[in-house]
Length: 83
Length: 272
Image (cartoon, rainbow over all chains, first blue to last red; front, side, top):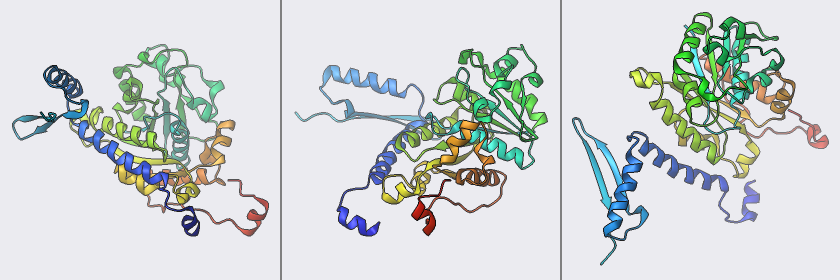
């Protein structure tokens, strides 16, 4: 098959595309795994509120919850457009 | 005390029931007292794969609702001693299962058996969560295909959070990866995820690799779990899986292209 590859040219193998896509999806899923159930809803509502004042993209808001020893920190990141 | 093992996957059609039937049969063939329970209420299939569909009288829901005793509902396998089947209900809806009811059934069975296999329904809803809730170990059945791998990861998330072991803060459910429908030719061609890819993405131990095989459909047609077919690659691969489950070290096979002999190349033979 190595020889065949040569003739087939540079076409990217579909399995490696699948692997790359899965690595991204799974990393995302796992980052959400330990979050409380209300996080997606909270994210959506925060986005709504922000959009009332500034025109931002749907993916311009990201929130994450980090746990320290005795407290949790809710981190909110908003990318505002220029101007 | 029996070991409770859930056979689960998230995605449907990846081979949960085939695997549950083959592994349960394999354990019983190795002398372990085994019962396999169908948790797919409303869409039972295990009885067909085990070849006992005409002997179903009572089911799991009947037992939980007190309409039949456990002894009445358990079906003794015709081929293997030590093997029993507890079928799911065909008519009830999935809300008929209650955590308390399932717990009671598992507790009772636990005294009489070495292994309890729970054949989970597809999805991540109530039925699937109940099938895994009391498990000590989980066999996560995965096809080398994107949606199956993603769903398996979702299931791993549930196993880590929504099981009794997780809720009680006990040792986590032991997770095993079972890859099914693996096609070494397509892997070699670059059109199928390799077993290393899947293992790397899901990051759990591999308990077995079942090649895509004609023997699986033949087995389900006949209602004879494929592990009985020890001339087939899939049958042997399930027997290997059972050995690993019992703690033996067995080298992997059927993950590389099998070289065809001159004769089978000429005559196109090689039914597996």
